Structures are given as structure tokens and as C-alpha cells.
Amino acid sequence: MNVLKDRLAADDHPKKVNLAPGTYRCESGQPWILPCFRLAAERLLADRGYDHEYLGLLGHPKFLHYARELVLGPKVDTSTIASLQTVGGTGAVHMGALILKLFSDRPSTVFISDPTWVNHHDVFQHAGWRTESYRYYDSVNKSLDFGSFVQSLRTAPSRSIYVLHAVGHNPTGCDPSLEQWRALAQLFKEKDHFAFFDCAYQGFVSGNLEQDRQAVELFASHGIAMCVAQSLSKNAGMYGERLGALHVFCGTVSSTKLVKQQLKVLTRREISCAPKYGADLVSTVCSDPKLRAMWDSDLKHISGRIIAMRHGLFDRLVKLETPGDWSHIIRQRGMFAYSGLTPEQCNALVDDYHIYVPRTGRMMMAGLNEDNLDYVAEAIHRVVV
Ligand code: PMP
Image 1 (cartoon, rainbow, N blue to C red):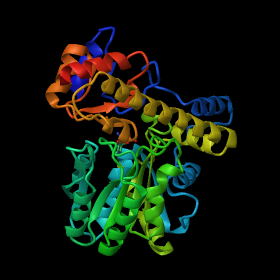
Image 2: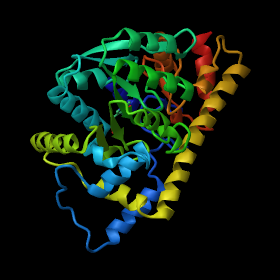
Image 3: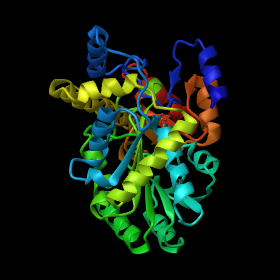
Image 4: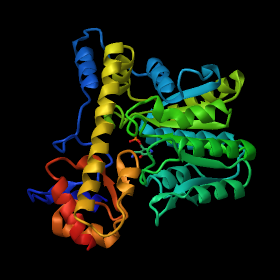
């Protein structure tokens, strides 16, 4: 991946296209500062009383309040949830893996979808877990392999920990339907499995933060043992500010106190405390109805653009009569399309057309725009035929 990054940086071909990053790009191929967060930053800058003091060990209380409400909804009983601000979603996964390793008595293997975010196995193993993949993706139909997923949940030891992508599965773009989430929740209850939600793309699928948390809300409403590792890197468009939170469902008020205490101890040892600036920006946006409404419309813009690019590419491939069925491009959801291109075809796109796609075939759809769609579709056609 880094090799690809270096090659991209050194490539001055006028038509080069970057479909490799894990970060959103606007129409002109640049990073996009969401207007609501730009306004919030201007407000902070103008505030003469603003400071850059350290946060407390659990993090920014207002940020935690808003982040929790965003991902869990307003109905949950907050007195039994231990929330911790973390260094991005990565930090949230790490702290979740760590606290479970130290204080849970669950079986020692964590189950992770195949494929998954490149860092999942490493982060869990780093915290002392064994990890095992469960079959998630049907590479023939380029869709969710729900049957295999269910089979894995049925045959795994009771009380196992499963990592679930809450929405916008990375890298496949294949999420269970609401019906399927309901069936999964049932199985989690039956087998007393632990749902370790990783929620990194809330708002990127439907453009609606409420709708994109339906799996998390559903599991919470069933009282399933769970935690949520939340990233706000993507939906706030502030990747470098390392915005994240971990929410652990503790069941009782007294165990919540204990978990919070332990999270403080672990945080103190690892990072002392989480970063403040991005958390201030999120709090500023969420506490102002006008800015909050702007955030909603910014997310609609992002998801709408991604969907338009999916259709733009699909329509062109159909028109070109590129061999194969390309409907998965418009069926899959969120920022990534798992194209099904072979490693050789991806290499050819890079070598011959300056279109940067990793060998997995995962394409970041916001790397497309009206100016490069024709070029990319033509190039894919040529490497496929
Ligand atoms: N989980 C998933 C599924 C991700 O895709 C990512 C980012 N690529 C993360 C966690 C990490 O998020 P962050 O950048 O906020 O650390």
C-alpha cells in the first residue's frame, strides 16, 4: 500500500486517478473540510477564552455525550454504559480489545470477518487475543455470504466475541439487511455471543446518521452484551484530529463505575488523555442546531456523491459491454466498492493507466468524478477484455 502511495506521489501523469485512499475526496480530488466544522473552527478561533488545556482521563465530557448519542441513539440507559474518548477509531478498537482481554472471561479467540479492515487482526492480537476469520463475503456473487456468517455464529463456542462492522463494511461495502441484522441479534442472544461493533462509516451509507446506526440500536434494544468502537474520522472529515470513542455496555451501574475506573487507568498508562481540539469542534457543531443541520446536509452530499459515482461507473461499464456482471458496484454501499478485479488487472490499471487501485480491488468511490469517470471506465474495460 505504501509502495502504491509512493508511486502515486511520484506520478505526474495528467490523468492519474487515486482510488486507493481510505479517506473521502471531493469533486476536485482534494480532502474536504465539512463546512459545518470550518464554521466551528472559526468560532473557536474567535473565542478569546478558548484554551488548550489537558482533558480528563475519560476525555471530553460534552464530546462523549454527543458521540454516544450519535451512535447509540437517545434511548439507551447511559448510567450503564462506560464511554471513553480514544485516539480515533483505531484507539477505540484497541481499548475495547484491551479491556475485554484484561477483564472478561470470554473464549480466547475473537472472530473477525473475512475480509476486513487491514488493521483488525493486528490490533486484537496486540492486545493478546487469538483471532480467527469467519466467512463473510461471497466472491462469486460479490455480496454478503449470510449463510456462512450464520453458520460460523452457530458453530463457534458460546460467549464468543465477534467483530461486526456496524455500517458500510470495509472493504466489501456489503452490510446485512435489517431483516438479517434481526436474525443475527437472535443468534447472539441464543449463544450469548459478544458483539464488538466497529462503527467507522456512520452517515456514509444512507447519508443519515440515525439510519446508519440501526444495527447498533437493534442489538442494544435486545440487551446483547456489546461494545461500540466509534470513529468520527470519516463522518466529521477530520482524519488527522483522531476522533473516536469506545462505549462499553456494562449491564449495571456498579460495574459501569468499575469499568470506567479501569479505562482511566489504562488510558493514563497509554496516552495520558485524548486530544481536545477535534472534540471541541464536534461539541460545537452538535450543540448548535444550525451547525448540526449543516452536518446532516454535508453527509447527504457525501453519500449522494458516492452513490452518483457508483451509478456513473456502472452505467459506463454496461454501455461499454464490459464482460461480467457489474451490478455489485451499485449494490454495495458506503465509500468502497469491492470491484472483483484481479490483482493482475489492478496492477495493469496502475502501470498502464495511472489509476491507483490496491491489489485487493477495493476502490474508493469518491476518487471518481465527472472528469475521470469516462477514463476510468474505459481503462477497466480494457484491462478486463
Ligand atoms: N475501523 C474501520 C472499519 C476502518 O475502516 C477504520 C479506518 N480506515 C478504522 C476503524 C480506524 O478509524 P480511525 O481512522 O478513526 O482510527
